[in-house]
Image 1 (tube, rainbow, N blue to C red):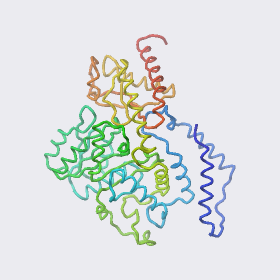
Image 2 (cartoon, rainbow, N blue to C red; image 1 turned 120 degrees about the horizontal axis):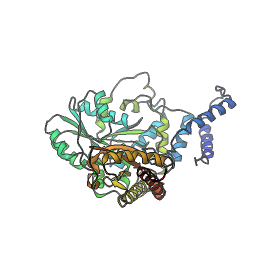
Image 3 (cartoon, rainbow, N blue to C red; image 1 turned 135 degrees about the vertical axis):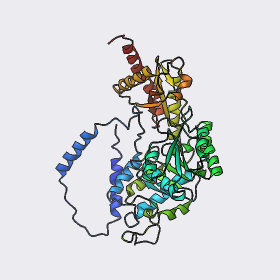
Image 4 (cartoon, rainbow, N blue to C red; image 1 turned 90 degrees about the horizontal axis):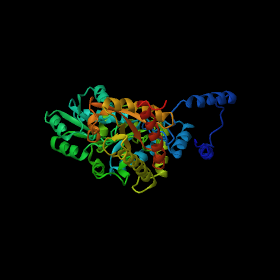
Length: 457
């Protein structure tokens, strides 16, 4: 099932790359024992089998999506040179590729002018955004919703900035009323809006947050690490569409190409609406910046050495799949959302399950029906194991009961949180596999319900 046909294309590209250095005198590289190499690589392949099948549509648990073949090949191709995009000396071609690729990401949000770069992932990207915010509004609090990624609280601690979590409403979005209460204290410097929370894919009310920011003078950072690309999708709900349409007004945006951008780990991106924040990064490093008067990417990033291979892979992917509405890339996102809506509809119509709110992106959370929240939580874990035995891999999550309250019926709410099942349908192929996923889920659920009732083995 793993693609191998594309390897011949990589070999042809490698020959073409090699031809570009034909004028260099030959040299003797370190020798490789071919038999030992084969042995070690084979052992590596054996060890890598101890993984869930992240590449397969029956894996619908965590946020894991295989790279596009062009990204995988471009990344591998760059490894023969191993460029470093810290300075132009170490990554001349890939630095240009990075600028072009990042401009493409900024263009999704309507930014023709921006400052931005790639980094190791969403954590580092969010750290840079909040570091800039801390430089511009020093000592003031950072707010994010209680469903925002936990990295924001950790980052605030690293930056020694005060942090507070704002409660969510029943749909997993930041509660605007509670946000207003926090803002009234007059010490808020930055509010983080999650454009697709990790647990449920909920989209914070960005338009209202931006309005409050304009009124009270705090910065707005959009953590779109997971959901950022969905602005290209044509089948968002009306509310989510409205929030994505105002992303251009945020002060900074983080997006992770290694999630929905079809890239290998780790490839994150931080973007700033105002290029002038680049002044905050200024530093002297005479031992790395000497070959060019042009701006080096290392002069606008906190990270130093960064893989040029990531830039090559992202650039190649965006050349093949332009970031445009109605294009092939956008249709893939629409397929993911359609798959989530399909699964949600099946769950909602089946008395064996209780659902939370409808998915805003491509994440569905649900639980089995039971007499109490505690029993439903226990049953969720049993179903999780039962579907895994059938090679269907979901995830478990502990979420506030209020997310499910509208659909719980007579279920006794003996706990404030419920352990539920979570499905991330982030592969376009999921649209065609929902039927099979449903069959396996129902089969596993029935098995667990029968055992619980003492029927059969």
